[in-house]
Image 1 (cartoon, rainbow, N blue to C red):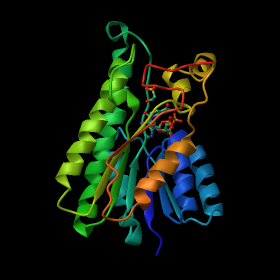
Image 2: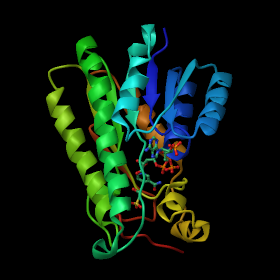
Image 3: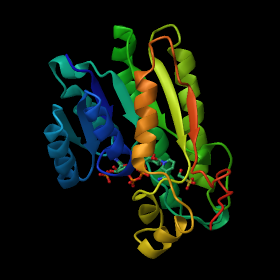
Length: 251
Ligand code: NDP
Ligand code: 8X3
């Protein structure tokens, strides 16, 4: 029987690339996101790759909807082997004392609370089965704050701590826990961050070859494919001309 990976935020970018990579690697997929049309399109593509796919449309900020989605799984689909907690976003790039509290709430509710909700729903059955792998998509932004990144950086620092905490708490079991911390990845991320300003978003990737979602998916799949006694705890993945979250050499 094929293994099962659940990827949150599979309608775009890193999540979509992870879903494709795991399908290519022989997994069946549970994919989630809010954009039902895009999710359906990804589902069709994955099915064409030979995977069986369940698409669940919900917002990770809605704890009741998360629970209903997981409760809707039956039979073998309950036995999730890999949970990729990817759904997340940045909103705004402003000084902390000038930021929009609504943007802060959305980031905190999605990047921290949504990830925690999914973890709380999925991990107990992994521990019960003594098998499973949680892959959280953190960020280089969680290692150190950069100018105007304040709250987004804080959410990714929280992802690091929450991931470390989970790793400690499941250490008695064979469940593995990984934090992947990407640097600059060209996805829809910056368009969302700048509230739809595509030109400003394009400038983020000017003069440097950024990472792609597929680059990060390769790392996630590698971590999931390592021998059972090997736990890839944390991986920082930067673009080659990126020295840190705030040092980017553009040519
Ligand atoms: P995209 O904007 O391309 O994708 C974000 C995904 O998250 C979409 O599928 C979106 O789906 C989903 N999502 C956002 N909010 C919610 C929500 N409330 N409920 C459910 N799904 C949601 O960006 P990326 O692929 O770049 O981002 C993926 C993750 O990678 C994020 O956690 C981000 O912080 C992290 N990251 C990104 C980096 C980058 O440079 N791009 C670098 C480091 C980390 P939908 O809109 O359908 O709900
Ligand atoms: C997303 C990458 O560099 O904008 O986490 O923080 S960055």
